[in-house]
Image (cartoon, rainbow, N blue to C red):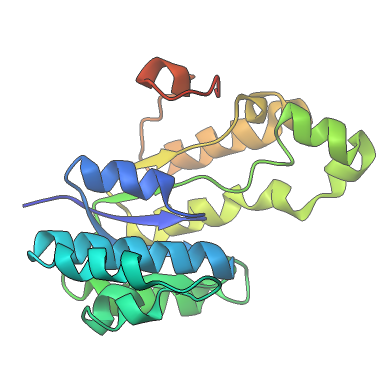
Length: 209
């Protein structure tokens, strides 16, 4: 049986896409941006149609899609549960219980094997810090979003997790957030390993670490 996962701070779904191609089954993608969620819904519909011999519907959608329209004409061709797997919500203190409830409804009795995701990294990246400014970056509320990632680990206790971020997270704020992540993971019973990857090593035309 394929391992299941949820994707936090999912963006347009690049990390999810890799896990799906590797054979994992998504339960939910959680993202606050409206347009990113539209992309996630369209990809969820694509994968459903591909797995159920319905790619002709997807090809027809691509040929007939009008500019400046969302993918609702495609989403209507798949079960509502497929589209509902995309949760458009800000991961925050006021929303987290509601998000847990929605994920629990989606997974039903299925185990949740893996949590993946990369909290917004502008506050940790070297470029982001240079653009925002040293004083302003210290006050950036995105600095603490990793703490919500830890809350998901505590609530679901997955077999494993993948926390993706920029290399600057190791030095931002004198390394405090990164040390806190490791300490929190260890306290929850996880053995955490970390290493730098470069997209260029995997035939991506971008020198992105």
